[in-house]
Length: 217
Image: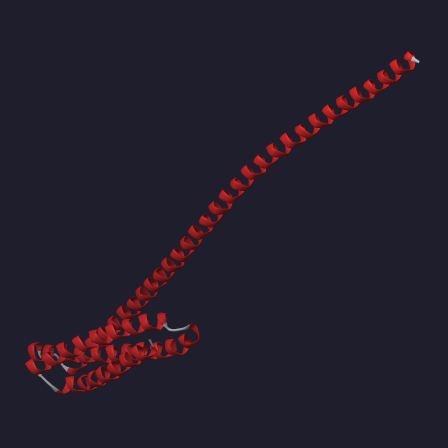
């Protein structure tokens, strides 16, 4: 699992190095060449974001004792990507201002004002995007917690049902045992009554035998 994370790290380092180099070249180019480079950087940034998603998934599977270190590295990579995106957006804004200057003949001061305005809007969009991403992450984590709770409730329900079944079986066995004991007690009482009657008959017989024998003498 850690080897997969390290492989993603190597790809991340290679692509971000290329992106950094290309972002630095954007202001120095013009025309179609510049447009193609902007599109190429945009595509590579998308690849970088996909790598971050893959690394995030890998971190979730790493043992807890090693997860903190990988989370720290992943956080620094995300910050690096955010910086690259800001630099790239500044390059794209500078590119757009250059075209406007050629078409409209704006002076440097107007271009700088527009650039500052665009940067401000871009930063606002980035903050909104981060808030949305944080909200999405919270929603995902909440869903995971909810699933774990439902799973635990399902497990507890099965345990309760099994306990009920055992209680029913125990109650049935106790009822059967009670009936058996009652029948045994009834037989014991009957046997004692029979023994008492039989003993009384024997005693009466002995008494009568003694009586008749005494009368005969």
